[in-house]
Structure formats: C-alpha cells, structure tokens
Picture 1 (cartoon, rainbow, N blue to C red):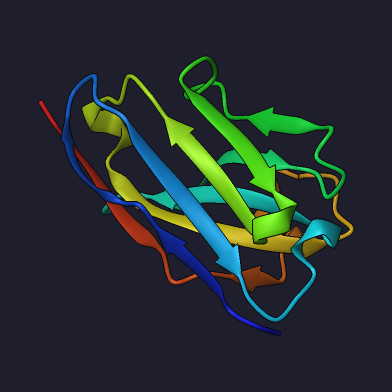
Picture 2: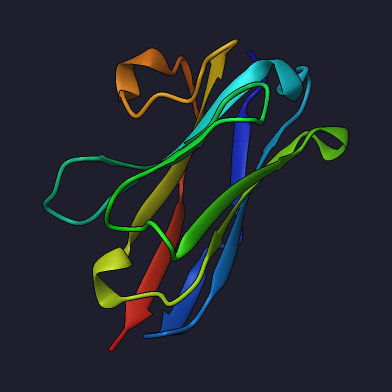
Length: 124
C-alpha cells in the first residue's frame, strides 16, 4: 500500500489554529475512510476524528467537538483536520490512518494503513 503522509504540525500558543493534512499517493483515497488519532507522551493513542469514505459521515472525540473539523478533498487525495482553539492538552503526535470502504470508525484496529505522524505542540 502506498504510504500516508501527514503534514501541517507545529508549535502554537493556546487558542491558536493548525491545519493538518493527510495525503495518500498511489491509491484512490476516495474509497477510504480516514481517521486521525493522537498520542501524547506517556499516554495511549486516542481517537480524534474520522470521515467515512463517502464523506457524508464524520465522527469526533468529545474532547475536540466544536473545535476540530475533518474534511476531505478527493480531487487532491487529501484529508484535512482543521484544529481551532487549541489547548495544551492537544499536544501530541497526530497520525492519520486509512480504512478501505470504512465508515469512519473510532476503533484503531479497523485501520490498516498508518502515517508516520506529525507533532503538534500547544504552549500555554
């Protein structure tokens, strides 16, 4: 499978915004559900947001609802995660993952392809 590549991470202050992108080359991304997960130091990986392959269904963790928005641009083979009103507790490595014909699950084992991650750091 062609790799997934995340970008857009960085360091921002509390209340700032970042836009993460997940790009898949060599596959028809429109047939994949894409999820974003994150892992903070010393913590387990946790679900952030997901979008179904059809794009019509999105799911968010309670901790990011109203602040993060997941969207897809199938023409660009890209899924974005717009993150607003960032908090220090959002600091983590963010990973995107793909699930062929998936509905956008919050369950990590359902995803069979993962990116290498991009660091997001929110300073107080």
